[in-house]
Image 1 (cartoon, helix red, strand yellow):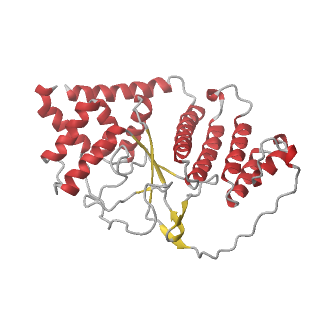
Image 2 (cartoon, rainbow, N blue to C red):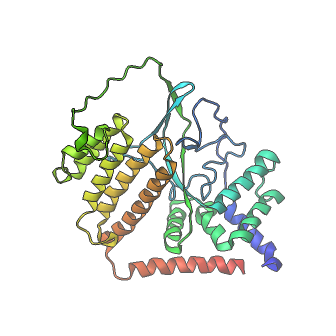
Image 3 (cartoon, rainbow, N blue to C red):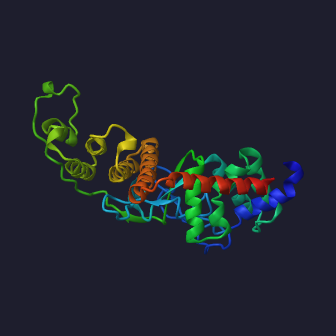
Length: 348
């Protein structure tokens, strides 16, 4: 491979070439956390290169890979984080969930060193080319091409976006997690004298409560057998718990809703697309709870990953349910194999 590096390097250059730079915004300097404490990273971090969605796989924020965080009605859902100094609420809008991998993170970090520390902005300069070759040497040519979302980077259009989507889902491109991005947050100060009206709870004999759980949702869970609730009822109960800041109770209710939605199917493959869509919505709501619950970042990431997996499963099932054409899966697989074969031929 080293003997053929000049031509391979040219191919890698084409893969990583971005045709235009986005307008550069000033780096955020407000009081709200960025990328910590359940807060998203910024879509536009204000780099001099104009690069966005750093450490996500693909150029900037690929539409075919990054999903907008929405609620059960499809409306965009912000993430709200409370901070103590200064006291108030930080609201993050236009929240995107994008896939990531160590190879993508290392490559983006390397590019950012080239532009922000060394002042080198050409994708053909020695610094950027070394970043590309380091990715190939460490992770392999095919992985780097797939992570870079090659079709869209070379020529951005609906067709190449669809081609990238097919490659992602048919070639088994590997990700190790998801990152969350948003627009710059808005800060709403809250006075220290905020009055909170406590929610009354029924008096009960603690001897009857083996767990000693006196959270607001424990009353709902104990007094109302789950058979009496529909999935929609549980979701409404979860929303009431969220407003009361009973985060564990909200998660319990969402889990109950998921159990009802998924009941009656022998396995995941037998569920229709609509069921996976409903489950994905609930996982998104759970992710929103964990995002506002300090110390539950791992659970938030898991919920986002579950939502992504369910959304992808639903898309595949929708196509099969709508088309139901013999050999459709084989055709998609064959197209993907042909594209990968072409990339390998270029490498050789």
